[in-house]
Image 1 (cartoon, rainbow, N blue to C red):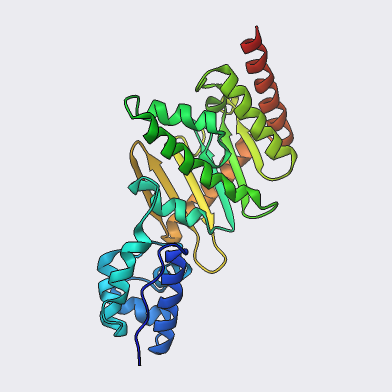
Image 2: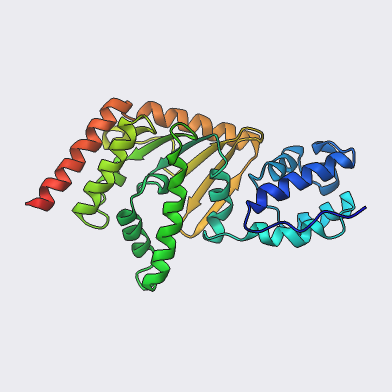
Length: 279
């Protein structure tokens, strides 16, 4: 009987690889937990691989081929699935974000990628690397704008963002860029496409002062949390860690302004930027 064919890299390779893994596991008569035991990982980890929310690394692909008798199918194809236009530390989080049913994000220092305009994204990426060639900046901006297409769907995924007031007042790219960026956020909020709250300076100390966090829920895989620093990122699926971060986010949202007041502040700041630029 012929073995599975190589996956087509042009068609969602991670989703196809996950589907092949589920098929091979069920054919072998193994549950996710049983297969996970053979790889020394949890059953939820296997579920994330099957759902396409977690990238298959070569060491796991090799063990899967051995456990399921699939020759070197998964090892061959995990290379195609690993290709990404995003930085290595963020690639897995970006790919998980694309299949999430709900995203909750706290942004302490800048407007998060899903809410950015092209001009704001360009200013941010230029600030990240002042000496990068213009074509490299173009590629980075294109990648970031591709992520924002998630919001083309009228309701999915649910997006709830808590913006620190510092992110709104940090003039990035100039006043005209900031005015456009804040008007864009206000438009999304007025269309009920995103739940937006602003954490004002007056809130004082809060539960997420150590940095940014992004929580993601999925239809058929456990929730995950992504932590990001300068040039680094970490995706966690440990249930206890995810539970703690969800509680952190709930406390953070309780300290932030309600959505209506937040919208008023965002629009007022956008008007201030536009007025000062005009003047």
